[in-house]
Length: 189
Ligand SMILES: CC(C)(COP(=O)(O)OP(=O)(O)OC[C@H]1O[C@@H](n2cnc3c(N)ncnc32)[C@H](O)[C@@H]1OP(=O)(O)O)[C@@H](O)C(=O)NCCC(=O)NCCS
Image (cartoon, rainbow, N blue to C red; front, side):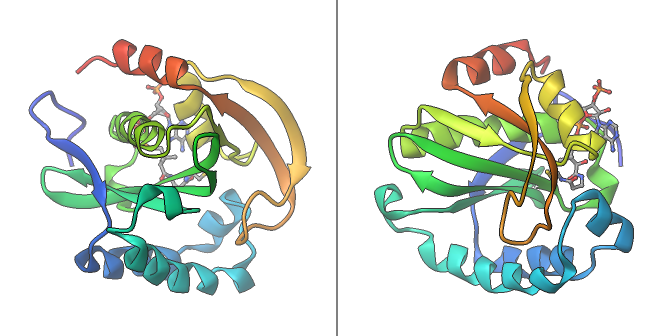
């Protein structure tokens, strides 16, 4: 797998039934080190599988009615990752998550580009004022990605940031549409 090239086609799009096996395999095949790095509670991971079906059922429904959403990251026609937005309050707020599910595609310059595209789409769909991202303070990948895009840690605190996590220290990032525009403008295509 090569690194990002200007000829690559990057698209964020709605989930389809064809994506479901890839996403389920991602959650079912996490290694012990993945589980540790993501601060997951292994007993709670199966809830993600049922949730993928709920995301699928929600496709095509009005954005105003969605309290969570998922976007597939498609590279040159192949799904390689995803972003979800949870606890959405339309017109106000959402909490974003990010995963390059194909390990061979990590650290090749794709994640930060797809993440910005997801942020742009979520701000558009849900007319938000603020998106929050709270990766584990011990997980270098998302923290480095967020900081590369110019986003800053406003506080570090101990919490259970989503239904599949155990309690751990998270870095809290607050992302506005203006910050996303600046990040998008700074990305070299
Ligand atoms: C975190 C993740 C989404 C980043 O996507 P990616 O495609 O690897 O990121 P990019 O290639 O765009 O890299 C963005 C920056 O982060 C850095 N980075 C990415 N992964 C890193 C890691 N594991 N350790 C240190 N730096 C890392 C890159 O080096 C780059 O910084 P640089 O340009 O200054 O060198 C991806 O690695 C991933 O899905 N990891 C496993 C799941 C996970 O941790 N998800 C986050 C849950 S909160």
